[in-house]
Image (cartoon, rainbow over the protein chains, first blue to last red):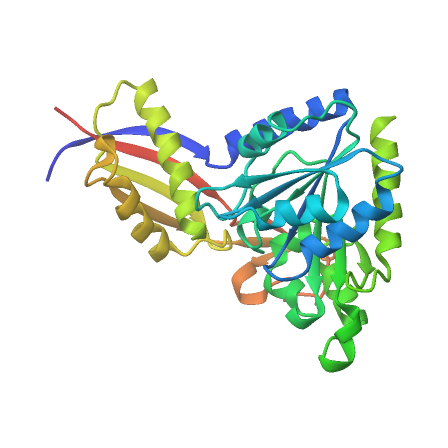
Length: 223
Length: 116
């Protein structure tokens, strides 16, 4: 057998990212800029929810959006057309998540002068984005009714890192076996501090509750 | 997909460690992976082979995985128990007030360098 020399490393592969994320958060605090990281499965209604929320808040706050996807710019274009706010597309180059460094690069290419709130729409995925701290002030996730009320049991990490869980597509609840109370219970098991907000992004129902939560968050961050 | 992203992180850190230790070739990388880290070891080694062989420093380099057991702690009765067998519910007192002590590690333990 070939003789080998061992070099001890003993280092978590998330360590660099966690440090960069903390640095970024510190910088955002000093600039009074609030960054929300929005996560979900593909097709849960992230973009529609954002459009509704932005339209409720754009007279009160200056908002910009970063759309992260593996490819295409359909979401960034859609947001810009529907709300008129600044929106850019980030490509992850095949990666299933954004990390703190990619988030910083995205922020650097935005014009954030006078901006109060930047929303990062993460790659649609319930596993990887939960493991990489982006440097955002808060994490939000959308769980849509057709996905089922048991998602918090299947993707525990995602639900334990989220400060707010938006339950979307409540209008189709009669057609699915989705129990909102059970869902709240499952979320609470993972994360007792998470706020659960049921909405229907298509009709706009409940979006005002999420918008007020966000407005309040941004104002507190600036103090 | 998830594992490939992790592999890119490992490669970046191994390259950095190799540069710091003036190493020209790495023949093995030993990882400590917790049982509940959400990483599937077989996928990780498959992705590793594909990505590592594209790097001069890591051609043929083997990825070895030590699996670390997951252990939870119960705040109610103060006992520890194996997480994978019992999940969130304490097997001793039935409480849900439990948290993970260890088992979600994804760390590079050491690298092996040909000794010449």
